[in-house]
Image 1 (cartoon, rainbow, N blue to C red):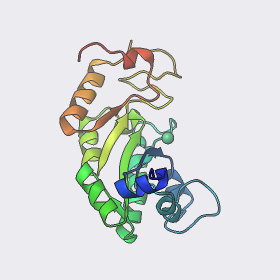
Image 2: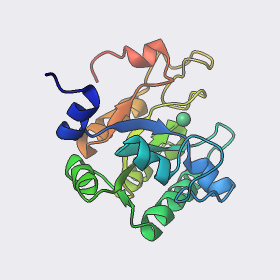
Image 3: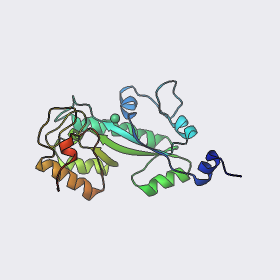
Image 4: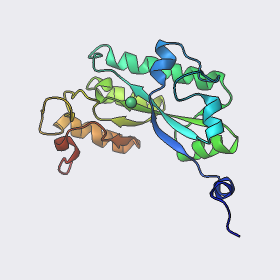
Length: 196
Ligand SMILES: [Zn+2]
């Protein structure tokens, strides 16, 4: 007799990871506590656990209205909201690599990962990029719907013909750090960049 799919999943204990949840803005702007079951929205810790969602990249989405002097600060504030969750909720653990994800899952906890959405968050600064990595960020979309000074977006005016020299340095630095380069939202020419 064959095993049911449900039983196979339990036996294999797969790690199911959501690559992008836009929950941190809710946690920061509306002070929503996702450690308790919520009557609305899609994500909270109890429902993650019941649904078998082992891990999720919490998206540090920086709206296009934030620019030089405010975009990086906004990213930090969103990350602080996520850090406050993992600092106070034993069921949620910050994870910055595969071993930490596996460890959290083994302990029956939810692994919380960080990804930045919108390259303008680094305000053209490789030091700020390094700082994001140091705070646990493991991917960054080069743009959101807004292009920036070094990369073009698919839904903004076409500019740069893809990545500028600074954009190439950003991607190189991300590769050195071990940060995923997320191409969501970028223009075709940014996506299809020639050799760096
Ligand atoms: Zn998003």
